[in-house]
Length: 274
Image (cartoon, rainbow, N blue to C red; front, side, top):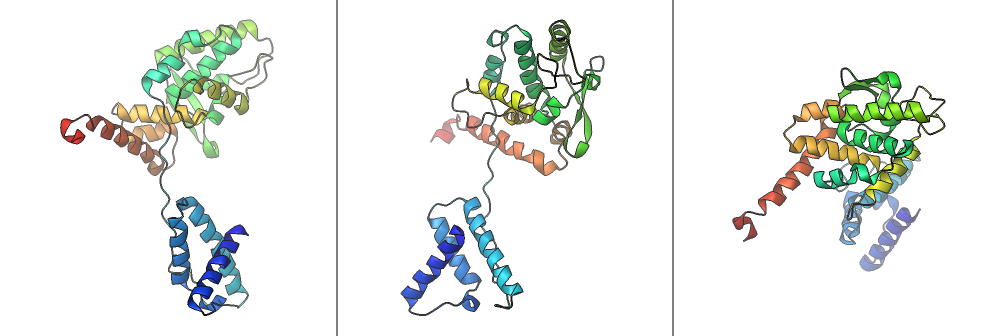
């Protein structure tokens, strides 16, 4: 309602300025485009402008259905392009410092939480995929996780020897300290499966120690995994398979991050400084 009221105010101001009325059937793409440009001059984001245009689009679609107007003015009109927000990631030194053993308690929950963060960072799996892992999904001999992603698509994600050692240690501590263990790999102290909320809280608590980080969610570790892989020369198609993306376009956003990193490195060149 507020979006539509803003457009009505724009029309009323134009009527007062030009001394003529603008009934609904006189409002064309040019009038709407002028309103859109006015919104952008107010430093509104592309997302906000597109939302206001969407509200207006729905109103004029209603007018067409009711026979109030014959032609939809949005036929030749498109909103501003959305600016891509680059994924938030952590630098390797900060990750190593955050995941250091001394930053975690040596009881069951501390050992479990450290393994959770290590697994999110080293495999790039989603939070929902992490809590969905069963004991039977962990193949220590092949050093691979069977992960169930979006739309129940399953994939195998390899892991390294260091993570294998942490998994074995966690299983031993879990066997010792937790009596009633469910089929879930990650559990609470009472044996119940872990929830996404517990994982989110544990990750957020650790990421809070890193200054200037705009986001503090498990997905930041997924972004960090993908960015690190591409920065170290991994093929984008391989990273796509590891992340479980259905489209290469979803993975390509991380190439923008690596390019920004390259630009920062290039700025060290004496010519770049000048």
